[in-house]
Length: 133
Length: 133
Image (spheres, rainbow over the protein chains, first blue to last red):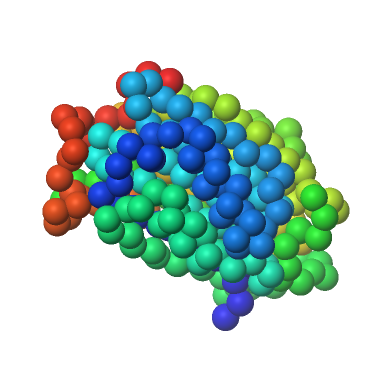
């Protein structure tokens, strides 16, 4: 059963103030994108008041996101990639190294699973990343 | 069992060229954010070559994303919100109205589920959206 994308949902608990650091969130995005072999189109990091950071990155292969709740020591990450050229699980090691969570959980969800009539491609295409940005 | 966020993963099949229209993707983001009662911090829409659109929105309550594969008539949407003040399912009706998919599937996933030791808040906090942007 083919799918168009893989989506990792990462839960990190037991984090310290590093998840409230904009520079570290930016670094985590850059390093994760590189580690998984994706292409960064644009990223944006936002710090909330009084705390919490969101980082979102548009990838040629879909997106990557980080959201932190420092008051709970919790950070959520999403790594959504299409195609077969990336290795999204490598992002998890980057997050572990930078944010050192006490506990980390990863769920992988298939996106765009092709079943039934709706799965018929409407035109010739292949399950690769968008070929050019 | 409390959670910090709700994450809708929306699969839309049987879509036509509307999912390749940057203006419609922008409109869908704006209307969905309004419909769910969220606060938009920043959005970015990117069109790939030769086709496909990604829209990402930073929300005060987390994020919203849209990714289209026009060659498959498929669009993926994510609506990730924290707190209890938003109604993320209302975004689905907006996507249906704008993109008219032939088939739509919605999965809801709890994020930041508080179980075990890691669930103990590290400071006084409440399960509401970031209070200020």
